[in-house]
Image (cartoon, rainbow, N blue to C red; front, side):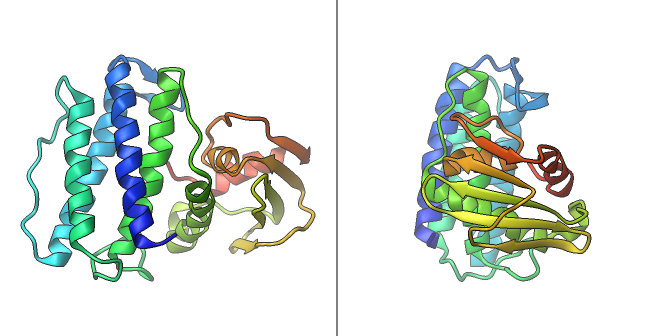
Length: 239
């Protein structure tokens, strides 16, 4: 996906997230984030978006946008405000604008746009699940989200677990395929049709959701050794 597509996704997913917040009970527990209420989820997403808006402003030399640190009684409107500030800063930058990130190999606004597109999409799903109306992640965004997981594992190896050689094959209904080897020294990813210890077949949105330990919306066929998915959750410890 291109920079502008990630920026559009941030804007689109933020709006959907905010709509779910407006319909939810702020004190309700989020099923996929059991330690959080809906208000906690809103505060997390708004706080992360505000943080990156400030990082972008530093990179472009623009004044840091001001926003309230707490969501208050109208969490949805608070998220709309902060999401709008983030999108403004993304649009004031270009993909190759140099900014700080936690990935030493990618110090660019493109990293921020991609990270915020996927962070917001997954938590939008969480918020919608809390009101009982989850919607899939758009296919191109979900496929890119799976690729971003591999990039995050490579960028922050100290935050991830290690496997023992288990292999996981992902086969999406849209035609994407990945073979993931969870090795003691990190992930090895091949984008091809190959046999894994466990194969998952379904919509690419559902495959991304499963990798993030979220329940799929549609059916996902599972062939092989089920504990391999538990090994994946030991390896990927993010979000």
